[in-house]
Image 1 (cartoon, chains in turn yellow, purple, cyan):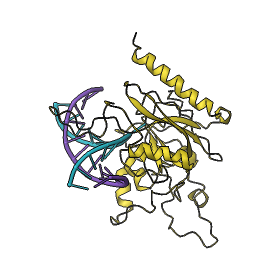
Image 2 (image 1 turned 90 degrees about the horizontal axis):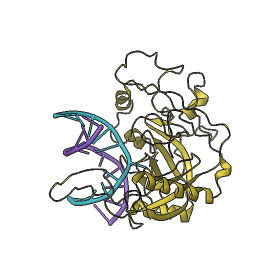
Image 3 (image 1 turned 120 degrees about the vertical axis):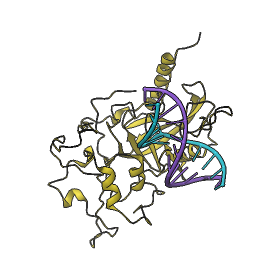
Image 4 (image 1 turned 180 degrees about the horizontal axis):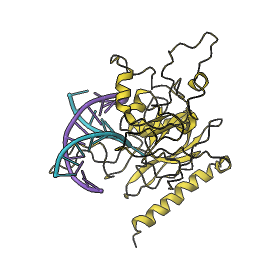
Length: 291
DNA sequence: GGGCCCGCAGGG
DNA sequence: CCCTGCGGGCCC
């Protein structure tokens, strides 16, 4: 007899969680997980500032005022240090000013060079702290954390530079310090001949493969051990998913890759990520739950 | 809510 | 050029 979608999903989740357990990372569960700073979701009533608990609204938490030059003593000034009184805990992200679009466009009007940093590097981006938060993928791309506006994987020759967790696959599991991730491809973005479309995402309609450049890059990450920047998005159904926007959760390593039958019945490429040590704990969103 | 464009970054 | 891709917004 055929399994229902829910049964199939539960089975996949169990299988994916077992992969994480087999990696032996369950011992790394953080003891004290900070709670996500509540961010009020009223976009219509943008009038008052009273919606913010204590901190003044800020855009992203990057050190955008910093020139690229390190200070003479070789250390980089962080805006946490330089602005200690007015900046909230950087690991928790900050509220979004509702005029954020305007802020962005007005802040850097040198169209020639949108980015201060190259996204095609492995590891952290200078000036971007773990826990930094953006309202959109576009802003995230501008800060070189994750370059693609849509794609979940930013591929490189020696592994992926970054990925986005946005809950695109309902059988992935997220334990914060470790998660499973589904590869790219297997989606028909052009529609049918009778009903042609021009989509950016779609349902699975054929098997994924490691021949796909994105999946190939993540497989390469397993081999090279290069760190991968990870952002979690608001669509992610996990207690580690932010309520809004996209949050930089730091560096992970891809420990394993394999193929399995995904929820649509098609083969998908899967990857097991484990967070590297010495990073701030990931905030927990008490309003969310998930796998 | 769903449907359907559409811009964009990046790879071939 | 072409194509892909866990966005975003608009319209209904």
